[in-house]
Image 1 (tube, rainbow, N blue to C red):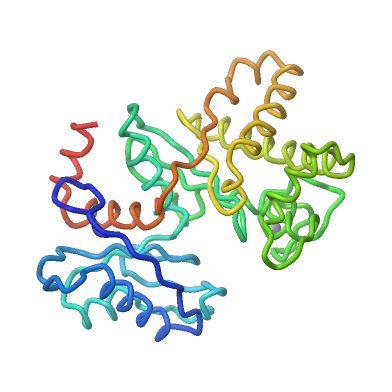
Image 2 (image 1 turned 135 degrees about the vertical axis):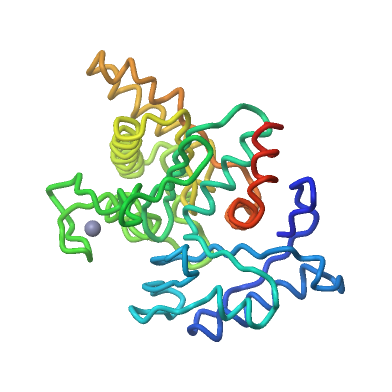
Amino acid sequence: VALGPDDDVVAASRVATDSTGPQGILDSVRHALVQLSDGRPPDEIAAIGVGVPGLVDVDHGVVSHAVNLGIGDRPFPIARSLTDDLGVPVFVENDVNAASLGAAWRLAEDQAVDDLAYLSLGTGVAAGIVLNGELHRGRRGAAGEIGHFPVAPEGPRCECGLVGCLEVVLSGSALARNWPTGPDTSSTEALFEAADRGDPAAIEYRDRYAGYLAHAVHLIAVTYDVDLIVLGGGVAQVGEPLEKAAGLALSQLAAQSPFVDALDLEGRLRLTPTGPIGAIGAGVAAIHRFDPAREARRYQRA
Ligand SMILES: [Zn+2]
């Protein structure tokens, strides 16, 4: 997306990422920029923000361990490569962190949002944490990496080595494995539709899934005590049925404990705003880095 002087989205485009490695990523960014700028001279672009999966060193604009993009443990200096090529400053952020900023930015249109956690239920599971309007990355960039917190002793074993991590019970990949459908159908939609129709196996699995989701929301709430916990990622695209199931599981948790009840977990739950919030958040992150005065104005306005 292109953000204008007033932080509004002035243009948007969508291209598939070439996932064959560093050159593929650079080509994809260039391709997206050409579509986006629609002939505008590049000097109108003040800065570029990039959201990318994997381990991101934001100070140096370097990414590693983005396995799905063909990047392994050898760090790829994505910011420097793009700056050399395009002549503008580039800021690189982890994709879930970028989406967290994007969600905060969009939700701030309707309400004051100081603290927020964005729980991404996608290929993996991770949360982005925004505290006082700023990303909280933590000492080793692991803040919010709850995907590898074990919650299910009965398994299965996770690639990280532990058993029953949130990621192996809550990710979109786990859901697709447990509720397989054809290649053109969303497993999440198929599951919730079957449960709505009264299919006992679907109801059982939906409620078990929602129970794990409640664990994740509870964990985030007692760790960061944020105002809002936003459900995002591929699984959240199913929308209201997920919010409803999670809300029910959270109210069942609250019914067991006055302490949990007082946390009002259900009241803090939100679905992700629609639209390209990951890309918006990457742009917001670049503004934050390269134009702090404008960032301050944005929060004053909100
Ligand atoms: Zn794990």
